[in-house]
Length: 210
View 1: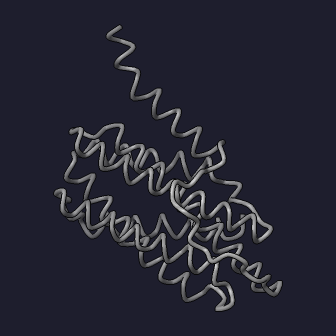
View 2: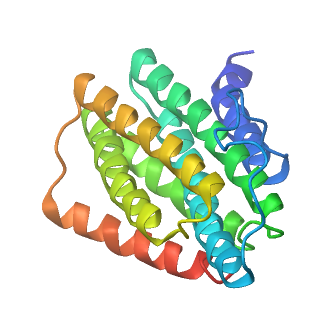
């Protein structure tokens, strides 16, 4: 019985991974895009699809980061905070998947790679202690906010649906960063922030095409 309890967190982590990668995402909150969005010109459709594929890949990575961090969180309060954020990120997955379908496209073929790498990074962050792990959340969400700001500038002005989805995601990311800081996030060294930016550029640059 004791060994089974020790395995429970790892079984739960494996279940979350399968849900994030293999099961259709179901949002618990309403889809933020306005109904009846008009069809886009082909060049605009392709650009929107590529950007929303990047956003979907980012949400897969975010799920993995939170799951990895939650697995090794020291306190139940931190674990609950991380899993709550992951649940809200699952809404983002559902919204991005729906918008990709509307645009006649699909998610990145490399999502399993993004998940595995991000889960490992999250586990390392969690192993460093709750303060550092929360600092990682705050910095990640700060960078994601900037990334979404860029997408709001790049998305075609005619694509109100994608813009509404990205704006709703952006508001959640800001709230996650604020919550992490309030819970005791420790600021990360600049070198770590720089490595995070470089890693994110590799993922977003690749997911745009694949």
